[in-house]
Amino acid sequence: MSKRKQIDLSIDKIEEQEKYIEAIHRMNEGLFNRTGYRKSYFCTTFGCQMNEHDSEMLINMLEAMGYVQALSEDQADLVIYNTCAVRENAELKVYGNLGHLKSIKKKRPDMKIVVCGCMMQQPHVVEEIKKKYRHVDLIFGTHNLYKFPELLESTFNRDKIIVDVWDVDGEVVEGLKSNRKFEIKAFVNIMYGCNNFCTYCIVPYTRGRERSRKPGDIIDEIRSLVKDGTKEVTLLGQNVNSYGKTLEDDQKISFAQLLREVNKIDGLERIRFMTSHPKDISDDVIYAMRDCDKVCEFLHLPFQAGSTSLLKKMNRHYTKEDYLKIIEKAKREIPNLAFSTDIMIGFPGETDQDVDDTIDICEQVRYDSAFTFIYSKRRGTPAAKMLDQVPDDVKHQRFERVLEVVNRISGEKNANYLGKTLEVLVEGASKKNEAVLTGKSRHNKTVNFTGGDKSMIGKLVQVKITDPKSFSLNGELVK
Ligand code: 5AD
Ligand code: SF4
Image 1 (cartoon, helix red, strand yellow):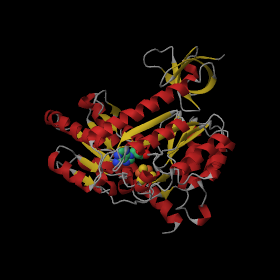
Image 2 (tube, rainbow, N blue to C red; image 1 turned 90 degrees about the vertical axis):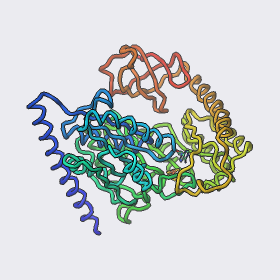
Image 3 (cartoon, rainbow, N blue to C red; image 1 turned 135 degrees about the vertical axis):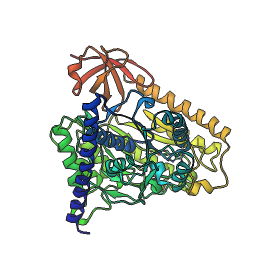
Image 4 (cartoon, protein in one colour; image 1 turned 180 degrees about the vertical axis):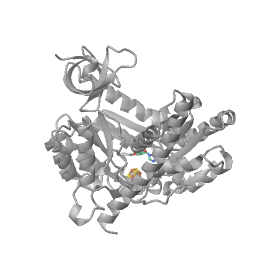
């Protein structure tokens, strides 16, 4: 298919959906004019920032259809679960919540229940819902999000559950950003899917193969966000460092080049990105981070496990030494760089010595923050079939051991900020105390401060840190 055709196809698809949005909007306005009642939605998101961003788009569509946000799930006319399949806990929660909704829907049969996202890309999940949770109205997956208005409309005159899950590797449908609300910080997808097949991970099966968005589309989207007032973008992908590989030759640029292009956008203040895979982070990316003034001094670089033999079994394609070399280089090139990571405990075959290696990496890198996960068996992945699974009680003991180290170090790193002045992008007022404003530093630290006022929301200000806490920093505005 030629490039031109692909773009037209996407525009056609979006335009088709606009018709459904308008039709539902008319229906909802009619109801409001007759009764004064506005239909409401409640959306719950599980999982990563990709899902958060997908939910933003779903919410934008719902609001364009005339729905307003409900105060609670039980009162909503439409409940959406945007699900995650990465760990079992999140899946169990979705089933639990669906169970809870059964009795509510009995009392209010007009309530619509929608389940979408990564879990739905697994056929056994869809079967389970069809069998045990017949009160669900609509199921769709990760590849046809843009079709939500049409699918929703089709539930209005049908009692039966509607299922529309596409196979992995769908095309990239552009243009969904319309109706986006003003956001100080915005997520921007730069690629979809993952080709890495880490042996524990379900994502390549639920999100499909890696596809990069065209640089022009990404830049246009960011320009339009900035025109509407956005100050910070986070470039999203499962493995942003391999951005560009699927682009055609005349469009091909690397992630480092993309960072340099985004950095040129006038009016944009900050650039972040996630997630990076250690096997693909090039020197060029580190140099681009160093050279681009808008790229924040923050690197999320998951290492998963410290032991080289475990990393091999995970299919990660780097050793402990490779990882530490990247960190060393990044620290050398970018002073004051803050680090975060993902750590997995309890992968099959893990020994106490392997956990020592994990702790050793934590001590050497000194992460500002770390997400620590207990390995969860995922059906269909190679690791689920490995025979040397670690018993639950051992996993939990090791998890506690690592968590203690991670928390100690992040507390120590925060303590270093005492007396320092940081640039903060103000996001809002604190929920507990309106006189306290809150925002993020370039290092991705949450900073709460006094001395400002609400007119500063959306602006960059300087804050002197007076009271560092374990998970945030308190300070005062520098006037
Ligand atoms: N069990 C536990 N954690 C997982 N992750 C991915 N798959 C699993 C799994 N099966 C974690 C990894 C990844 C993060 C997003 O989720 O640490 O980096
Ligand atoms: Fe999963 Fe590995 Fe891909 Fe990350 S890089 S999404 S952990 S398969």
